[in-house]
Amino acid sequence: MSTSQTDPSAIYDVFVVGGGINGCGIARDAVGRGYSVFLAEMNDLASGTSSGSTKLIHGGLRYLEHYEFRLVREALMEREVLWRNAPHIIWPMRFVLPVHKGLRPAWLVRLGLWLYDHIGGRKLLPKTATLDMRTDPAGKPLKADYRRAFEYSDCWVNDARFVVLNARDAADRGAEVRVRTKVMRAEDENGVWKVQIEDLRTGEQETVRARYLVNAAGPWVDHIISGVLRQNDVHNVRLVKGSHIVTKKKFDDPRAYFFQNADGRIIFAIPYEEDFTLIGTTDQDYDGDPKDVAISDQETDYLCACASEYFAEPVTRDDIVWSYSGVRPLYDDGASKAQEATRDYVLKDEAGKAGASMLHVFGGKITTYRKLAESALQKISDTIGAKGRPWTHAEALPGGEFPADGYDAQVDRLVADYPFLERGHAARLVRLYGLRAWNMLGKAESTEDLGRHFGHDLYEAELRYLVEHEWAVSGEDVLWRRTKRGLHISAEEAAAVDGFMQTLCEAQKAG
Image 1 (cartoon, rainbow, N blue to C red):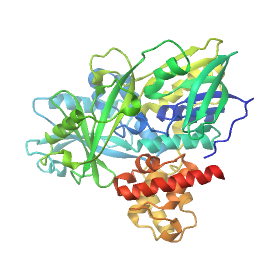
Image 2: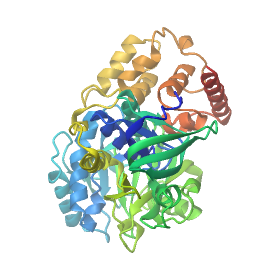
Image 3: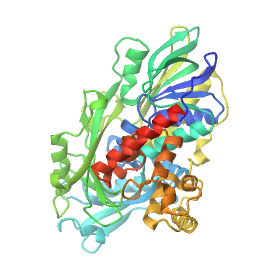
Image 4: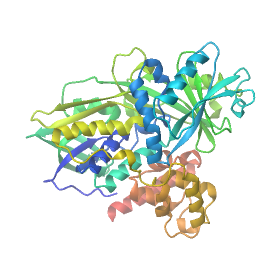
């Protein structure tokens, strides 16, 4: 990706700090309305909270218990909007919620699901059903004492790709997107932000000027206020860690499970990346550096124990093939428990010393990122003047320009156009890239035309595409955020990917 220096005399309309889902969503919305936009991310896109989620586009059934009806309704309404916008990386999933004696009574769960079905404008997703677990296949992997369950709808999302596609669309529309670029300092100079940035790969520094500054740094949002803006120490966010384990496949059913726990919390068990099961999440207050977040032994034992309460075959540490953790930057509303802190977003605007405007983004969830961006744009337009109207509701993300139910047809078409591809490989490429899979494959007529093979179904052509079009610079970017092929290839193959990426990026910089 280009990292050429900007015109020092240029003044952007909006400068966004942070390349997570909220920052990329705001940048995309803003540039699509006609604002000039610069976005800086100090690491990789989606390298923090936005790739550490449970990977659901959901209303948040459990938030009904905390009376967050506005948040739940907005999230429910967004499910089908986002599915239509990105049918390659978002798709419907049914969730099985077994009735657990001694916990929430069945009538209360059914009431919550009735609300879930009716307050969010559901049109395409199937409604709730009641299951007899003694006869339904969903009961097979569970202990025999779970005899009744409810089945409801939500959606699954490839969260890291969701972020990248928002950034890609923003760049396609004219935004300047920089990764591995740290914001060192921001000063209000005569009503214009003077932002000093550093390319962390080259050490080069430059100054970017902008009329409006958006602080969407996620867990680092307070650091931007106290460090970059040099205000007094602040405490706006409550950092809450959520951890997940990925195990060998625990069940063959395409549906996911929603498990209630005796402590009042819930976990999901979800089919994941063809051969695995994703189990999570935890909710714990976190006071460390967000970059050091990792699952603890206590969390690992907790997730294994909770899942084993339901599965006939216990979940043990030996089943775990990978784990990941994320830090949610929730607005500190004084809730006594981490799981009770609001997941709603809070936007705070203020002025710098000379009147330049800025916006701080707190909290939020991946499902409501688009509505958060619209709310941010309302504040931006109120301050520096309106440009364009809300537009993201009906615009597909890159590669998603096909009907919501059209994924299988696109796989058929890709196999027909590239008959040398195994169907599983073609299905994965359409899942990740949608219609842009054709751009990646180009004129290839055989697997040899895809270049060097790195294991499983990962080829050089895909790596080159990710460097040229999706800001990837390392093996980790490719294997654990863009593709998740790290779950399928060996350590030696992963090292080869990393080495090739280094060579590719060095050649690109030299060129």
